[in-house]
Structures are given as C-alpha cells and as structure tokens.
Length: 133
Image (cartoon, rainbow, N blue to C red; front, side, top):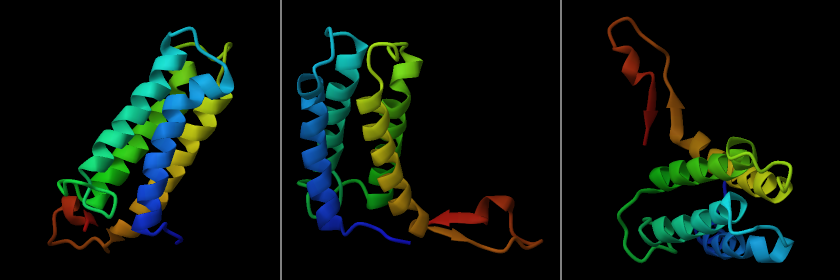
C-alpha cells in the first residue's frame, strides 16, 4: 500500500494546519461559531502534536508515528463529521467534509502497513491477533 514519506508527511502536516486555520477566511464562512472554531482548533492541534512527533518535522520526539497517525485519524473524523455533529451543515459542509476526509485517508494509509494480522491459534489470547509495531 502507498504511504507518504515521513518528510513529505511533515510538510503536509504543517501546511495543512495553516490551511485549516485560514480556511474560514479563505472560503468566507463563519460567524465565529462552531463552523469557524473547529478548523482553527484542529489546525492548532495538528501543529501542536506535530511538534512532538518522532519524525523529520518534530522538534521534540515524544510520539511515535503510529500515535501521530491515530491523532490524524481522530482530527480527520472530527473535522469531517463536524457539520452534522454540531449542526451547521446548512451553512457550510464541503470544506470540513473534504479536508477531514483527506486527513482520515492519509492517516489510514499510514496505519494500515503498521497492522500485522496473525492467524489466531488456540494457545494465544485473542488480544494478540492484531499488533501494532
């Protein structure tokens, strides 16, 4: 499966966090309500946990990439579903949906190679079927 190089992922993290923070001004939506707050907070969070990720773009190497991908997946799902969860879908939903979907897909592309599926056996507990490395 295709996965982004870590250096490219770092560039995408920081550029997309700035894009998310500027999205309300770029697309001309927002009354300083949830449709504006969600992308700004998501952009700040992406920038924050990218600083602490163990990759080329991280300043402090605390989080492994799999944790970073899980954060990306969580932020992507939050941004993607926010128009419906916070009920502003009638005002604007496309920027949130497509940006969140892109983040979720990139996170899944990074997470799937980290999953190793093992054949279950009778002497191993079920918790060892899927492992993260």
